[in-house]
Image (cartoon, rainbow, N blue to C red; front, top):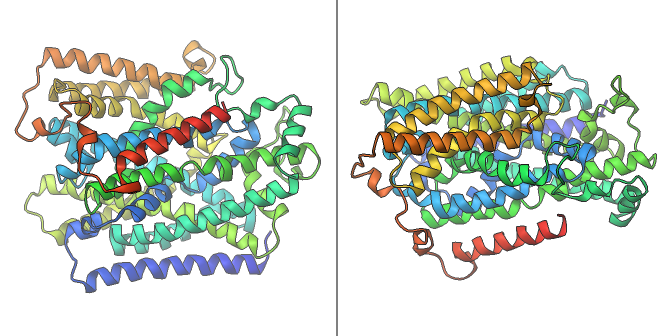
Length: 546
């Protein structure tokens, strides 16, 4: 159990975020910004620093802090691929998707899909996006946060999470996207500061990189420093699974998921949207060193007897229950006071993830469901519908916690779910933007059949884990499902030829080089230069940690 100083710091931080969030909402009202666009998209006035920080904050939750450290302890740097590979998909977002999203003036990605395809595609994506936001972005984050609060303070997991969610819901529902982005910017800074503190503490305790490497060499486990593993690796995620599978998950997550992309939809202009996405790509380099690496240091500290894992317990096979490794590092490596700062960082991840997801759910319910049923709805009615839906989404997420707690690794659980949701959505977005012959009928059938197939495969995998289908790594399965979806959409596009409208005709690239020809800022702010710099940086890092 932690002391009153650390608990006090945590409470003060939560109240500070609540005050800032409410202030953002009140100041927006005082400025007479009552429109739905102001509430859901911050009046499309966001600049690149806020976009980049908000993208990162919405992506990084307590799940990442806790589970990436767990994965570092269990398998080394392997799961860092989910962080560095994100840079490639953020380049895709900046170059190929942002221009269409902003040029079309859409408020949601389902709205974009209707303009490129048809209403049926919009309705299906709305349903999938709302479900994924509730399960992936909210419920899993609640679970990770509950585990942390229970481990550190002994609080009842469900009561503590309910309190945190109510506080987060208050400023999110009152202030809309502006409150979300302002609080997320603060939370990102706190989160990164906390992660740097625990990373330095683990590094210092171990005696540096060389000492850690020596321990791994003595244990015959130097492969833990490798990001790309060979075929047959015990992790179940060899190099080809990463190369083939991650783009399917990543393009959906970073380019076609409302919860993430909504920050870009609120951009002041195209350049701010593009540079904001690329800024996030550079920040995504850090998690390998400040989220995953501390877990690997914890492993070597454990092997040298400098970290006591007895409180974590072991299973019947003698394997350490590594779910609580991050909180254990906090209590054993940091003094009182700094522990409170780390708890604030963990709460930052939890609150930013929940607030971002709630805002996206309310936006989709208002624009893609309520406004479609009542086209004459006023801005006040849209905002009210959004607020009610946010409350319902939060309550439903809380009810899912006991079910999701059955996953051994929260992070792997999230990506397992995404692997079966993403393929059809990634397919229709990619073909829609890059292939003029992708038709409305083909999109509809690909989304329907692809989603049904994903559910069937997911259920079969869980019911029959010992069969051949249960032995396929989820990243590879995502690629297989994507290939099926591409074949299906291409076939249907020829069976049901496209009939472009005046709007859809402007929403695909006619020339592969066209994305590079847009107006760009001068100097280092040029999105073309930033894209190249980010690409080279990540390739070099992979060369070092291959």
